[in-house]
Image (cartoon, rainbow, N blue to C red; front, side):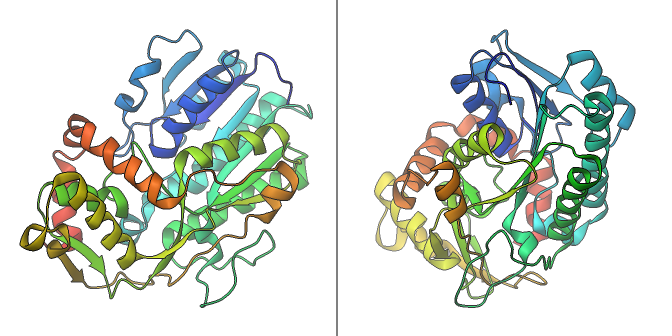
Length: 353
């Protein structure tokens, strides 16, 4: 990609990773124009981007990738030169109870975006399509080893199957139509602006409300945790310097079992809030029925990112987690806004509490 005055489309830019990426991009590429396409479903929130509302290089587009004519028009009218595609239905639990939205958004939405890019860019080798995906496409690991870029796909949930399908579409458009694509598969992210249906913000939110902390099964499932701002640095590098047609795994090299994460969050919050003994957050922990097809362990091998792009995570987990906790403590108005109404009904149905 050229280094000056790019016109970038970030899809899903009002979501968790997307909004962090929009903020990162405008800070580190101030000459670029960033168009943020988001359908503003339950997890999208323009409050995440309040600090850039007045930036003349930031533009919000309220649109849905499931509408192909609208997507094509966006490319033509705004002269899009590059895409970072993050828009997706992303919560495994919701994919189990309602898979249709995941098929329509994650597969068909990606198809419409690829078609719009192909139609507008033609055979030009310069515009780049960066597809942002997940480590869940690889399935579940045993006690040893880690996912690498050549690991066979073995998705186990409707969510991961929909993301695997979109990954394959992106690969096919490179090999069939020579579209300049890169794909990244990342481990579990955490940090500011994450919707509190995901583990870490859910635990923080419930601790503050002195509500039970639901843990699936026995809490032994293992995840590789990555601070969202480290992820944004990696996405930037892959988009700007990654090799066309390549996949890059982005991980934190930071494996924790879920129950240990719960305990750490409880202990950090106890210190922040001055709780102890019977008032400790640990007393709120309850174990709930495991979700169907719950993958046991994820771990990313990020050595390709280090070898080719000199990237590695900068923030250790405990520091990142403490920063995240303090962000939620200082942004309770944001939390209240996103957890009103339909979120509360979803929570009751999901955890039966």
